[in-house]
Image (cartoon, rainbow, N blue to C red; front, side, top):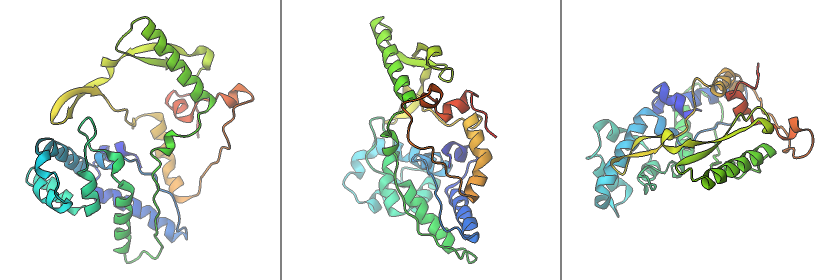
Length: 282
């Protein structure tokens, strides 16, 4: 699932649940009571009605933090519903108490909901199970297990490309600092052309900033990097996802290659290749 697409299509939480349930049901009808669903941790923020709720909760908690301090989840919900819109109050009350509590946990340093602490996968599992149970024609089995990869994904062993790229960024940063180029971010371009043709430079931090609400006030922050729905990586995904949902298309590329021909050991990752048009796929 892609959060940005959910937002662009203005899908409500109920529609997201139906989408997952439909795939589970279709696979079950084919005798496949197994599968994997990848859910981005920030998905709830991108679902329009839930996103509005999160925004209003952040604003309300920023101004009424002491008033709800020490209260249990039910009491907090009852009180917060007075400070948010009627529509958001209905969404909040419709969520399981566990999710309600996670939505009201302490904010991060910017005043935002800590989405990594909201167990979105458990919420979806519970709601999909309820949806499938309500379908009289569903004869399959649904006993889902969840696993959070948020930190494991960042702890993977680096490839030669990763190491070369990060070394280059660090070296470029030191050159910028040595020349007193304050307020710049280290940058390396032309990543698909081979290390000898990479172009190093600096990007002014102000070019990446926009105004967002933080602790109930407008502040300049670096804009989040989102999935580009018109980009080649997403188009490749959208073209293939229906087939991936129906059949087993897993690929194991083997261990990272550190020694050998450069075209094998120093290969640029597929996402960058797709973004730069350097990877031709059918």
